[in-house]
Image 1 (tube, rainbow, N blue to C red):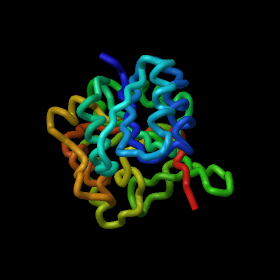
Image 2: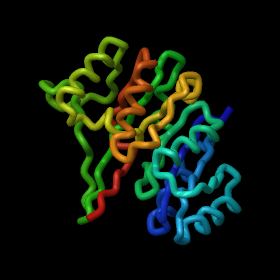
Image 3: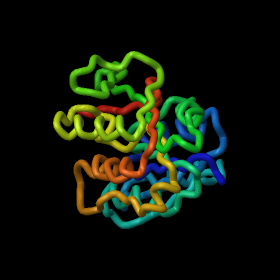
Image 4: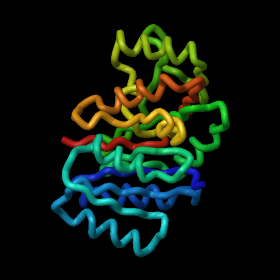
Length: 225
């Protein structure tokens, strides 16, 4: 079994796609597949993907008519062969040791490994984000935080009261266990075009006994004007 399936849905992303793809193929771990989902692009995106398919047998391209990001992610999940699933948005990129850093935390009893991220602002500045696990707590300054079932429940309750924490509201920068997703048939809601990540995460977290957060910025979230 492959270690990680990286799923990248895209629509007319020709401007960003190379940086995104190369950040995956140049990872410090080799044991991965890159699943590119073309959600009905009308630009050169697919041609760019084909260059990488010809050069690296870890790259797959799946084309579908335009159905939105949630549907594209679901196509990726259905085709994933890795032990873990990692979502990457086509205009973002990951640090070269991202998958190694996350996969080092994995063992049988850890159901989700989350990394931190940085925001890449339009002016070129990159700012690491801070994370707190409770609205009354100062930002977490340590390296690794483990949450058991009770702490996960409390974390979710606080989030629903004060929906500011970014750890539940997006699906990138983390390793999901493919077995949990497939066994429980967890898919993104294709009718939603906002917050579908949040709903996906709440469904997934129901099945987690232990999650680990690594306070290292492994993902770069690119902001646009």
